[in-house]
Structures are given as C-alpha cells and as structure tokens.
Image (cartoon, rainbow, N blue to C red; front, side, top):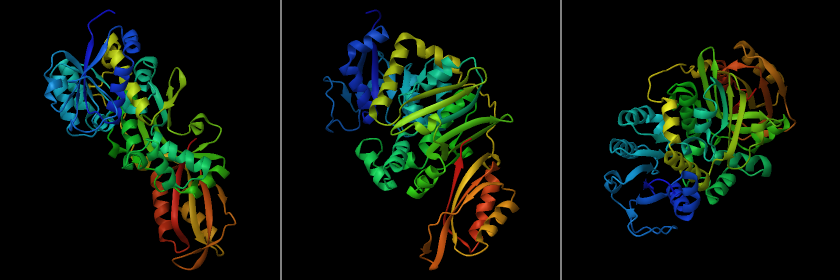
Amino acid sequence: MAGAPLQVGIVGLGNVGTGVARILTDHPDRIAERAGRQIRLKRAVVRNLNKPRDIRLDAGVLTNDIDAVINDPEITVGMELMGGIHPAREVILKLLAAGKDVVTANKALLCEHGDEIFRAAKEYGRTVCFEAAVAGGIPIIAAVGQSMAANQIIGIQAILNGTSNYILTEMQSHEQHYHTALKQAQDLGYAESDPSFDVNGLDAGQKLGILCQLAFGTRVKTSQFEIQGIDHLDLTDLKCASELGYHIKLLAQARLTNSQLEMSVRPTLIKKDTPLSQISGPFNAVLLEGDMVGKMWYSGRGAGQAPTASACAADLIDLAVGRAQLTFDRLDLWRERPEFPVMPADQTSSRYFLRLRVEDKPNVMAEVTGILGSIGISLASIVQPEAPEVDPKSNTPVVPLIIMTHRTTAGQLRAALGELELSSSVRGPRICLAVAD
C-alpha cells in the first residue's frame, strides 16, 4: 500500500460521526484499497467520555479535548460533525489555521458562513470537503464541480430533505395523518426528536443555498427567498392533488430568469408521471439543467446515518488520492462574484393550487373569481366537490373550492389571499401551493 496513512480526527461523535467511525473501523481494507493508503481514525472528540456508545474504538481514540486534534501534527484531516453554527464555525477555522483539511456535513454553517470558511481555506492553502452537506448519499458536489464543469447551469429542481419526503410518501401512499407519519419517521431514525428544520423547509433551504453558490456563483442567505414547510398540510391536500393528477413534494427550485436567480423551497404539486414525483420514502433527488448537456438526473438516500456517513467517507478518500483538492480549487468558492442577483420573492412566478372553504350560497364562486380577476390572476380550472360540511365557528354550511391558476407572481397571489381573507364568504383554512411546470 503506497503512501503514509491519512490520520483523521473527528469532532462530534453523534449520529453521523458514529457512522463515519464505523465505516473507518469496520472496513479498513476496502477504504485503503480505494484511497491508495490507510485512512485511520486517530482521535474522536466528544463532550462526555462516560456516555454509552454503540461503537467500540481503540483505547485513546476518545477525548474531550479539541486541542488533541488541532495540535496533533500527524492528524491532517479534521472532520467537523458536531452540527450547528457555534462552536462548529470556530472549530473549522481553527482546524484550517492549524494546516488541516476539513470535512463537514454542516449545511447550516456553510449556508450562513461559507464565504468566511472558504476564504480561510484559500488563505491557509487547505481544502474544505462538504459532499454530505447537500443531498445525503448523492455525489452532487462532484457532479457540479466535475461532471458539469463545462456547462452554465440554468436550472435546479430537487428534493433535498429525506424526512419530509418520507412523511409525504406515507401520507400519500398509506393515508397516514401528518403527526402519525412524523412519529414513524422519528422511530426509523429519519427525523430528529425536534424535527423543526426538516418539516419547516429550512434544512432544504440551506442546502439549496449551497447548491446555488456552486452552480451560479451567487452567495445566498435563506432570508432572501421563499421557504415553506410541510407542517401545515393535511390528507385533504394530498387527496385533492392526487385527483387532479399530481403528487405533493417539498421542492427546492432555482432557475435563471432574465439574469436573476428565481428561488424557492415549498410544497409543490408535481405531475404523477414525472421522475421527481416518483421519489419516495427517505430518498433525495436532484435534476440539474445545463446549457449544453441538458437535464441530468441524480437520486439516492438522503435521510439517516448511513448515506451521510458514506458521503463523508467518500470525501476522505478524495482527499487521500488528491481529487478533493482539485475539485475545491476549481469551484473557486472564495471569490467575490455575485453573478446573478436573487429575484425578490414577490416577483417570482408559478402556477398555483388554491383550496378554499366557502359558504354554500349563490354567487360565492363569482365573488371569489372576481377577487382573483381584479388582481390579474387568470384561472385554469375550478372544481367544487360535493362535500358539504358545517363551519363550527359560524354554524353555516360550507363547501370546498379547488382552483388552479395560470402562471402569476407571488406578489399578485399574496394580494389576492389578503382580499380573500377579508371576504365573509371565505372560511379557513386557505391552502395555497405552487404547481410545477
């Protein structure tokens, strides 16, 4: 086996860190064969040395002293797998300053502070690997940095959160209620005990921000574009969508429109016969569109310990063979180059699905369509299912009203929803979802 061993220090031995440690300790020969040399876990930094763990490590590997990694000249790669913003940011900057390459799966940190971290890596001549930060086991960073390097990427459509996709699949396929499907995801290890970032769309938004920096050269904060989660959906929405020929997915989208970057993360109706609609369970998928190659499709597991740990281990192998350094240099992430500004959210456009509950009386449909028409929203279809019920607040008969619009701006739609809110004929909830082209 050629070359000295690559010595690694892990900071954070939680779900992902344990998965990486298990790969390195359980499959050393496989890893060495593919890396061209041994990759050895020398240190693993934890907060509590006495905490029971479901992995056995050699004596002396566990430590609660971060300096045992930072100040060890034999450790040339530090893996930040603790998550969160602080102290993860400070740990990565110290690792880089100490002359170590870094592997991280921390999408929140890279989305909010990636520019600082990438500039520090450039200053110290080091590499930051983050394949696991975006799409679990899908090698999407390599795809953007290598496979599509000759293209200008013009569009991204992606399912980037396996937890949300699992929940929506269970609701769609097995008619599980939202909270039942969420509990099931937690029991299977797809969702954290606090699933907020997964179900409110922020996790997918952070990942989309990283992808946009790679693909478009634009540094994006999650505050710059619309993010909606799935936690307000119920079975009625999925059933209505299905009857219209759609599935609902938490879709992350970015597209160049008139030299601006149109971005969003939100529950979206996708035609049943399209590839993204078929992605089920804890899987992720990314559809990239390049100006020369056209559409390229990537899919794989996105939620759980194994796919994320696998991507981290792949980064280690890339570092060992020298491939990671070339990719990182080519991505040029430290350069100030806001090539495409982010389009203001109100100017973005889409088709929309509206589900309203309206009073069961004459002229209500005319009132609703009149409100939408007065704001310039053109309607593609209106369906009024025969499903009368009684509104508990007003004790009046109400019926559902399902509307599909033609393409309109988010600003127009927001204004229309405000007008509908004022109408005494429209009862809550007012559900509004985007419809993919």
